[in-house]
Length: 377
Image 1 (cartoon, helix red, strand yellow):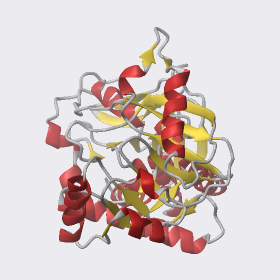
Image 2 (spheres, one colour):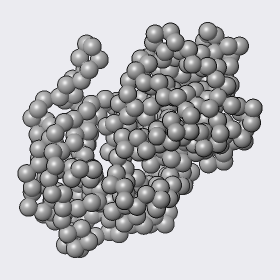
Image 3 (cartoon, rainbow, N blue to C red):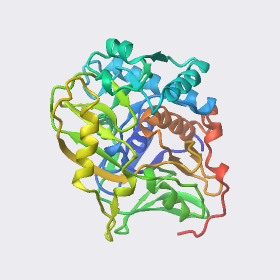
Image 4 (cartoon, one colour):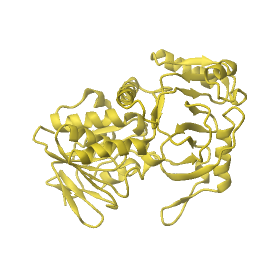
């Protein structure tokens, strides 16, 4: 890309698309955001959005995530009173002491802040936790946090519109326009066209299908998942909990967000593309979350959302321009929350400055192999 780029079309109204658009606006670029339904109506609206680089991963991915967390710390420092972004730490335990020990060893090896604690010690660090629920060992990561992505998207989308950007919602299933093999805009489901100098495809789990129409293959391992939001209650702790039967984070409004993966096979896909899950499964997940807190407070589900969780086939993020479709960038990653701010910043830099960012070097789309553009339109 080059400094001649003056108008970018972003396809996708989730955290990564909106972050990219906001960073482009700050650089003085005209931006149009096109999204299928409403902002945050896809994966960003049902993400646990735990800010971390816990466990094992490649050094490049770890560094990328650490940079992402740093950007959130900067945002929190600028908006200290925000109740949708907090750094209270994270707790993990698995089935058996070895799970926690292995995780702790991997984290210490890469200088990630990690404490291996027995249940009693953990209950002293996190007083509102039910120590009885903890296995023989747990990991406490004091520098982790969480964000409510719908609130982040509201914050960033205001910057886009204040900067003169256009946000088009309710566009339906849209596609990338090409001419002479180059991306030049987006066509909505109704046939409306939004043209520009380049296109960023950041459609969460739909990204592989969108770029497949351009003859580009991204390996896709996106599973179905569910996020439950509780009714308000007196939340005893502000930490993220990642446990064998429930993953929990605080949420604005004295609520919590809950997810996990043990119930994936109980999700039913309907003929119209919607999803259902038995009420008793939701109740069981909420009960598992309640057991994590001292006194096992009564918690009820206020609602839940089900959909695909975006995960590339090799687990690593996808960020970069498509070799076979100049002017088209693809963003596809499981860690959309942690990487939202830094990822949007780096993609915006490449689009405007025309220089490839070193931090994205191992995450380029071509690692999956790309065919030629299937058709120009």
